[in-house]
Length: 299
Image (cartoon, rainbow, N blue to C red; front, side):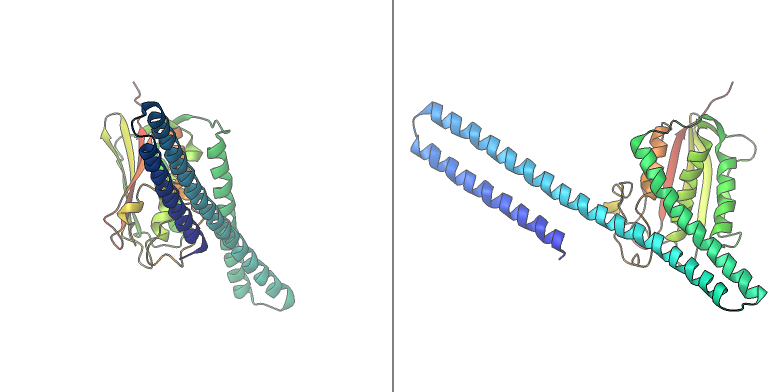
């Protein structure tokens, strides 16, 4: 049991003891004032207020402890995500500076440093985007966006970025008609990219992701990303979109992240009048994320 878990258990136990003590005092008050209506009513009302105050205080305290724990986990995750690529880039630069390296090896070092720089940029970009969507200071430029074309672009970039073979991510999208929404293309690209990155990251060593773009209703567009990875415990499905929250499951210790990706996805989806939801049959059974947006109907 961690220190914070002990603190939560302590305050919950303290609340229970105080409630029990208050109940005992209230019973004693009723007995002492038997037959006197006004003092009894006054005691019952005061008792109810004290109980309510104790419960509210305890709930608030427990939530605050959990929020601080999530914040600390976020700081640790971001620190790791920033320090690791910086240390790697510095190591390769020192190697290039201190010794002679063949052209082939030099090109290999450059590729690794570029990949680390991309990882660093992605982490910083996630943190900045989380701040933007939280403060809602960015209005964005809205216009018609072809969701199928945008998703196709994101799939191609994900294959290159994660060094996957062409069949690792399969795209099923209509080519005979446009599925258009009114939105900010850059923000929607962030949403689809985050969903694809998560699907690849949590797929393990064997990546097989299916992406489909469809219109389940005349006024709705779906982008659905399905993986066959480690899955999500059902009790956590509603919490995974919270800021800083990361799935608690077996096999996740070596998977790093900031806990901001899905929070950004949900915030952007809501800003576009849509929603995002997740489905999973449990650990080891993969997960499906669906982005639902209002379709732009053109005359």
